[in-house]
Amino acid sequence: KFILQSGKKINMIYIHDILMRKGLGNKAKQIQMIQDSIGNLRILLLSKKPLDSVYEDDIRLALIQLFEGEKVNVEFECGDQIYQGSGHKPHLFIPLPTRPN
Image 1 (spheres, rainbow, N blue to C red):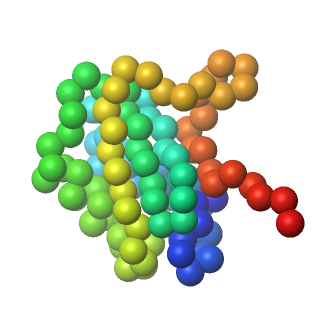
Image 2 (tube, rainbow, N blue to C red):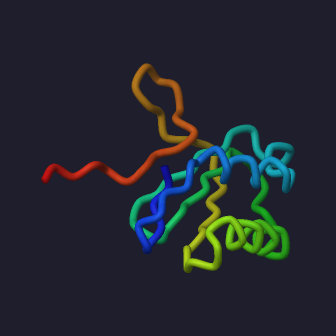
């Protein structure tokens, strides 16, 4: 789950749904979402062409609605490689690392 600064958790499937409804599935061969810190979402795209800024902003606005106005930095990165998970299959979502108590 994606964790907001307030502590609220959003199931990543809702984020994925917004990305697909905005047509991102047609613009990239693969998509990977990474939460590397609270309030930061990186979206990696297996794509040769970067997205234009107007399209990125449209996706950000839709995500802001999902996050109910909470501040979240959304970064898009296009490249030719997606992080592989165990078994060499890429994960759709990489959450924050779990920290022992």
